[in-house]
Amino acid sequence: MNPEAITIKGIRQGLLITLPGGDLAGQDWHADLRVLDTRLGQNPAFFRGGRVALDVGRRELSCDEIEKARSLLARHQVDLFAVVSESPMTEAAAQEIGLVIDLGPMRPREPEPMAEEVPGGEELSAVDNLVVRRTLRSGQSLRHPGHVVVIGDVNPGAEVVAGGDILVWGRVRGVVHAGALGNEEAVICALDLAPTQLRIAGHIARSPEDKRRKPVPEMASVRDGQIIAVPWQGR
Amino acid sequence: MAARVFTVTSGKGGVGKTTLSANLGVALAMNGRRVVVIDADVGLRNLDMMLGLENRIVYDLVDVIEGRCRLRQALVHDKRLPELFLLPAAQTRDKSAVSPDDMVRICDQLKEQHDFILIDSPAGIEQGFRYAVAPADEVLIVTNPEVSAVRDADRVVGLLEAEEKGPARLIVNRVRPDMVRRGEMLDISDVIELLAIDLVGVVPEEPDILVSANQGRPVAFSRDGSLASRAFHNIARRLQGEDVPFMPLREQGVLGRIFSFVRSGGD
Image (cartoon, rainbow over all chains, first blue to last red):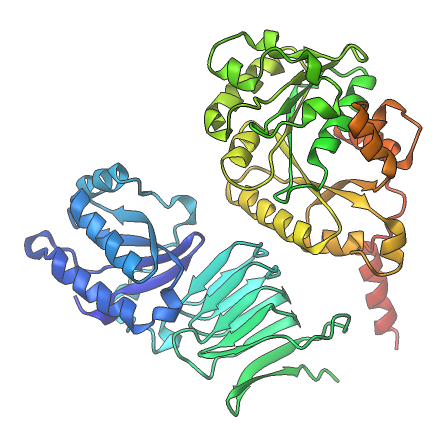
């Protein structure tokens, strides 16, 4: 298994990391964990503070082995909350150490070709994009390696972290981070851009202080090393 | 109408949950409904004092859960109102003594003999909040027109949505119209715009309320007294299923938006 084959998807409760392979004959969990470690190390900012469900496929894992994965993720400041597996043994072990094994209706539908065609995350056109039709409330966090569209608001106290662009058909009042995997070309668009904090790749900006301005659609991008928000020129 | 459990919660502390629970309980009982108000704030109980019943507590919620008494023995009956009962919290214990299942069981039992069960939730989003919300048929979120309170309320709404607890309804409490007019306090519409849940009440801030709380006689006892009392009674009627109009809200509903489009298209 190589780092680029590990797929990452945004789901309602956090991120779903799918480890491909998992043929029982050649199972080498330690090797797989090393590869996962490398993958996580490639984009620390994207993962830090997130919650992860790990899909291990057919692998048969003991409590100890799952615990090792949990510790590995913890070292990258990621919280493992679920293990998804086709193996009943793995499911039982996961449950024993308090992890969820069923993501319920929140589980994204499986587009099978995805696991083979997707590289690490650099070519965003091959990674699927996420459309979320609800308002993100305070305390909620949405992370996704591709582009993210929110049809709703991003309330203060909520955050969106995307590898690609972030388009909000609504108000942005929380924290939004586009290009979180290092893409400086990423943009953030919103009908009302009034974020607590705006981040594109490694740049961070606050909103200017005008409190009672009329909301106008804007697009924020990085120009000459800083984040500029340009209003939509309708007429 | 079948018995219903309402949990009054907020996230933020000090927004008026206990005052609301007390007054709502009184208002519903004055309308002839059989009401139990449960103080779920184990360790920091206040509902008993606000209702003026603290001297009559013999058993409490934790005694019931731990089997030291029957549920009926713990219910404190308000002599002023035959339909109103209080299930007090324990003061010498803490929230680890109660589980969500315990609360669900207690409410199931109470539903047999009472019409409305109001649970006064503690502040926060941890264990106390969780066991207070577990038995709820509906959650009433109390907030103040103030940014921290609204931020916390939004968090609570998000948590309830994630648990698929059904839509919560909002009560905006401690409103000072003079401050709103001067732009020193958030407008109700600002609050609703952010929280985006149905409004079930707006209660003005009044000095009476504090005085009554200290005297153990909620303002709702005087039905047509202050504006706040009337607001509490209106909320009670809405919970009973009546359609009581709100007075001061200038809401721009769908109709308003359609009119705007027609106007621009006419140029």
